[in-house]
Image (cartoon, rainbow, N blue to C red):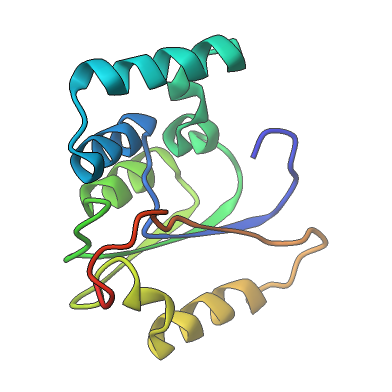
Length: 144
């Protein structure tokens, strides 16, 4: 979101904090803390800034951007607490939980799609709308 201008943003199943991303990789890859710390340090060295700089909680804190945060309570890849943390620091956001859709089916759910479309269409703005959807690059339960 650095440098991007938008009046609305939708997140679906997104991690709010970079450390949650690293924790997810650690679990999915069954990697050691040492390995994940090495990846984190490499990213910080290349980016020349701490990884938390890339967290949505950092990027969106106090920003005047309308937001819709959608997260499933049974998401096994990104804990739903991440949505609550993002909502806490993003004053212009609304938080919507789904249930029983997991991390992937939420993207095919008609009610979720309708909610996103309604949010994007409400009070049409002069800026384009950015949508960030987090999906893991590692296939897990096909329907989860």
